[in-house]
Each structure stands twice: as structure tokens, then as C-alpha cells.
Amino acid sequence: MYPLRAHNLPLTLDLLDLIQALTLVLTSAILSLAFYRLYLHPLAEFPGPTLGVVTKWYEFYYDVIKDGGGPIVRINPHELHVDDPDFFQVLYVSGSQEEVEKLCKILDNECETELDEPVELRVKFLALASDILNAFALDTEIPPLPNLLPNPDVQLYWQKMIYALEDLTPLVKQFYQILPIAFLVPSMVILPFSPNLGRLKAFHESEKSIDRLAQEGLVLMAAGGETVSRTLCAAIYHLLSNGDLVARLIEELDRKLGPPPAVATLVELESMPLLTGIVKESLRISAVISSRLPLVSPDEYLIFRDQVIPPGTPISMTIAHILHDERCFKEPKKFEPDRWLREDWERNHAEKYFFPFSRGSRMCLGINLAYAELYVAIATLFHRYSLELFDTERERDIEHTHDCFIGKPAPSTKGVRVKLKRRGLRSEAH
Image (tube, rainbow, N blue to C red; front, top):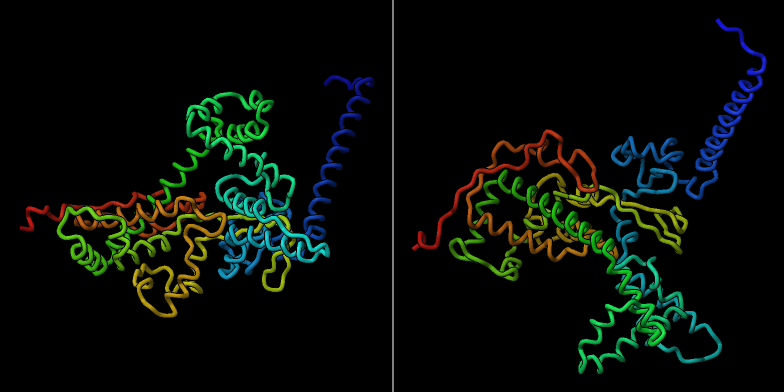
């Protein structure tokens, strides 16, 4: 061994001291943050597992929602999850209703003034309609169009842009090339000549960037394809597992459409009671959106039972839990289209909690297209083909075992497989 040189000793000690100091600082910071999240955080009063309250990594490794823990649980340092179907209609309130309530508050304030001045409603109604559209179609935080109702100056700004476009209409009728040419010219060139049109052009540019369009296209393809596919798989499995239902469906289709291969309009399909019940029950039992859907109420307190949730708190609920909740649906694991055909309390109760496409401003924009796809696909398949399940198991191939926003079956799944043959052509019926 070589003897330790004296001149290296201070350097070694300094390095050790630095490591110890950094360790102490880091440990103190972690403990302080943990203490704050446990005892001083605005959500400290809400129940939740200690590790889940302290760190989001707990949420990553362990699905606390499935484990229960009460109707409202703090699942990570910043978010609450509510497991109460009745709260869904409070949290996911219609965006239109929210905006109307904002307008009413503004008008209430006007009523309380002592000036007795008239209220100009045109700009407010424009703000109301624009905010509702913005909430449904765009990100409300994207400039240059923030929420209009709380911002009178921005209301006027937006109104001038809309009016500028309206003022161009008579000219465009005669010279229709103006708008296509204008949208080819950079907004900075237009601004000096027509400020309002230039601002509108800038807004148009932000929404039609390549990145934005690519993101929208990906969302449409991902959200609209897999969800309908999973729902159809569930419909095929559950129908073919119940021969009586298949026989009733084929009888309804043949009676309404005639012998196969008939082509029906969507209106004709929607008028069929049993088919409608099957579509709705397929959406319910498949419950394809398995992940929780967080929302934030930025300015208002929310009341859950006797607890007050502060503004700015992410609050989530899980649609799949509600659609399979026995408090909402009798025998929720049973595929029963007839629950949607009965005119009784049970049917009315089920309708109250049926929102497979979510609700309010978070409702799926493709709801009508999805319904149309389900009606047409199910009707066409069972009207034209005789189907038989092949080596398909509910636990392995249908039930969700993984939450990937869309629920996924077990890794060992073989898919939904069927044997099929045509039911016959028109010529065979004569």
C-alpha cells in the first residue's frame, strides 16, 4: 500500500463534507415537502394513503382507486378522486350552463349598481357564444382568445375582429378571391392596412399550424378508432353469448329491413328498440375509458357532501366505475339490453348515470359519429351473417386488466374470434 499523502487529505475531507452537506440539504427538502403535503397543503383534510399524499410515484406503482378508501380520496399530492356517481353531474357540468351562469353573475352585478344605466347585450352575447365554442373546440388558454365574459376589453377586441370579417362580406361576394389571397399574406403585412383583419388572420394562423393539425389528426385517429373497436368487440361477445338475444335481434332486423343484404338508413336503425338497447348496453358494459378524467374549477369552490374543495384543485372521476356501479345499474356485470327498453324507475335511474361519452365540456366530440358506427356495424353484421364465437373468453379477451386510458384485456388475449357464414341473398328469399 502507498502511504496517504498529507496534501491530499484536505481535498478528500472537503469532498466528503460537500457530499454530506448536499445529502443533508436534500433530505431536509424532502422531509419539509412531505410535511407540507401531509399537514399544510390545502388538501390536507382529505383522506388518502400517506405515500400517495407525499409523492405521485405511489400513484404510478399502485392503483389506489381500485383499492377503495372512501368516496373521496387524495390520490396524489395535488389531486382528489371522487367515487360517487351523483357528483359526476356536478363536476362535469355542461360547458354551456357554466358560461350562462357567468353571464348571469355579470348581469347581477349590473343590477346592483345605482347608475340605472342600460346594459349593451350584443357584445355580451357574442362573448357568451364565443366562450362556449372556445370551451368545446379549442384550448381556452390559447391566445389571442382567452375567456371573454370576464374581460370586457377583450370582448370589444374580439367583436371588432368579427365585425371586420362581416364588413368584408359584401366585397367578398363580388371579389371572392380576396379571402384566399388574404390568408396567404402574413398577418404582419395586413396589420398596418386593416388591424382587425390582421388580428383575425393571426388567430387563424395559430390554429392551422402543421404541428397543431398533426396533433388534432392523431387525436381523432387514436380516440375515434380504438374506442369504437373495443365497444364492437364487447357487443359481439355478449350477444353471441346469449342466443336468445341474437334471435330477437335478427327477427327485428328482418322485420324492419327485409331479407339480407338490405341497406338501411341511420334513421331506420335508430327506430329499432332492441338494436338501440344493444348499442347502449354495449357502450355501458364495455366502458372503454378506464382512466380517470381530471377537471379543475379555477375560480369556484365545489361542495362534495359536507366537504369544501378549494378552487384550482384537480378533481377526477372514472366513467368505467360509474358504468359498472351497482348503485346505478342493477347487476352491472350482466349484459342486459332490456334495461333500456322498460318504462319503469330502473330505466330512468339508469339513464341518469349513462354517460359513456362523458358530459359537459369534456363530452366526446365524436359522439354522433360513434353512435352511427355502432348502429350500422351491429345491424349489418347480424343481418347478413350467422356468427359463432370461437375460443373467446370473457376474463381473458373482454375484461379490462390494464388501464392505458382505454382499458385493455390481459396480455394473453387472443382477441374476439368468430366463425361466420352469410345468412342468404335476396334471390334465395324468393
